[in-house]
Image (tube, rainbow, N blue to C red; front, side):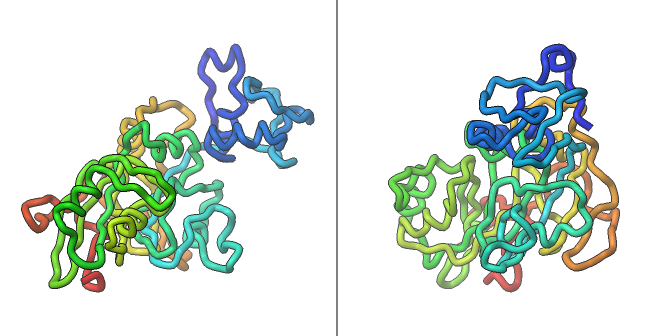
Length: 309
């Protein structure tokens, strides 16, 4: 359960923080809900962002539904192709399955940390910790997301340089310099790159490829920080270890607190399977690596395999 610190017990907790602790949304989105008039405290609508609440005595509702802070849970999903990164339900408005359709038997309300588009695969985190989710996705914290990317055709040195230093996208936005970029695998006509991003604009890597005239043919996220999907098959998920949660908190520059529960055990499950399993990859740390083309060091795991020539 949520455990206020001494100051919060004395002065109360900011409403948006309390909402984030209940898994409603990130703090920033909670502020939007408050300003829009969707939040009530003790039956009265509240629109002031400075409002503070006392969890022991105040009743908070969002759109008429009472909320209660949950113990924090953290899961890694190896997202398959043709799955929507949405928390709106198990299917979206077009009838396509969402990531929640794969998270069988999890009672907590989960939200994906960032997004992978419909045809992208790989590492996704799902949690009810809105503060951590926002910190991981916001570029000011610099948490690196690592991708294996197959562009159409081979990039020139100039085109590689544009990806490295910044590309102007179709809406005029200019991307930040990448954290890393090197050749990971080469075929007769295409090249796989490992690319690390500290930001996460909508469909960023695909739009970067379009901007330089080399559309992305395949895109796989292989890591968020040092968290990888080693040992997790596509469509399967597992809880993060306590060590991995600590790594994410450190990367996002957040302090651990009592509301962040230890990672649950024995809750790894494949899509469509009613069984649980306590087996998973070893605790913490980066996954095994392999030598990439041209001397780079590429991450293993859910990167290009036999079907990704």
